[in-house]
Amino acid sequence: MDDQPLTSRGAATRARILDVATREFAEHGIAGARIERIVAAARTNKAQLYAYFGNKEGLFDAIFFASLERIVNVVPIDATDLSDWAVRLYDEYLRRPDLIRLATWTRLERRPTGHLVAEADHRNDHKLQAIAEAQAAGIVVPGDPFDVMALVIAMSMTWSPVSNVYTATAEEPPETHDRRRAFLRESVRRAVMIN
Image (cartoon, rainbow, N blue to C red; front, side, top):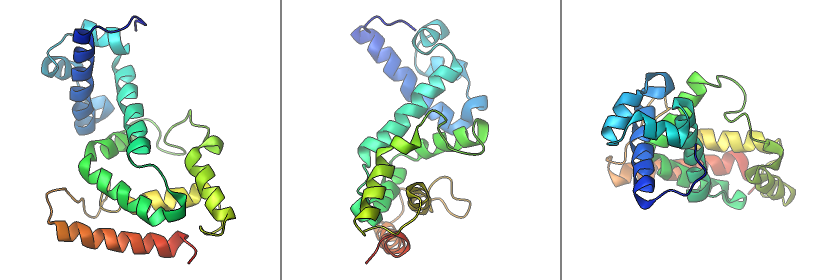
């Protein structure tokens, strides 16, 4: 894993590997993903993949942590309106179901209990700080900020690819999504927001 800057060609190869590997891991999980399929579809070779990522686990880590960062950046928390945050998460799961599948594979194959990400210091998590501040301001119900966050995220995932009841898709009629968004918004508001 070279610290040398990537050439534009090298950057393009690395991006292709990440794109293909994201689909491969989302579909097959860590154990089921195949490096041979990834390098063939990315039009590269194993040596190049290993030079960028070290091994299969390193490649998965790069994809998984990028997916977590994407969720945080694309769907930033607004603890003063957790109902809206839940709806925006719902929309992101419709746009990128592969991100939820990656988290699910991580839960199934790496961390069946406890926090999804072992390295995270949850006491310094900005989402938890935002919720604690909203609780102190009387906007969010009292309780452990982590539990509040976990409940809102779980509610936002009701129709996501991890649902064991029903998985929504972006191809469903817009009015179906509008109905779900309204129901989710009101449910989160009643569960965790102080009127």
